[in-house]
Amino acid sequence: MKIKYKVLNMKCSGCENRIRNSLKMLKGVKDVSANHETGEVIVTLKNEEIKDDVKKLLNDLEFTVVDDSELE
Image (cartoon, rainbow, N blue to C red; front, side, top):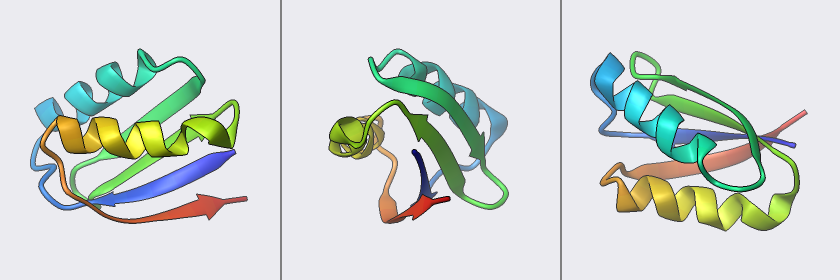
């Protein structure tokens, strides 16, 4: 399952790396891509049960998630 998150305050490649590295540490996350130019984070999950954990972690990292949608 892939989820696309729209993130407001991701401003640089350092933000992208911080998001990728942090989310990859969550059990159940297969892959992460982050793009500060589009403000999108795409997370591939092993199961949808951790969807809320991903959003919470992004918020804990002080990024503002304004929308999320399932892909595929």
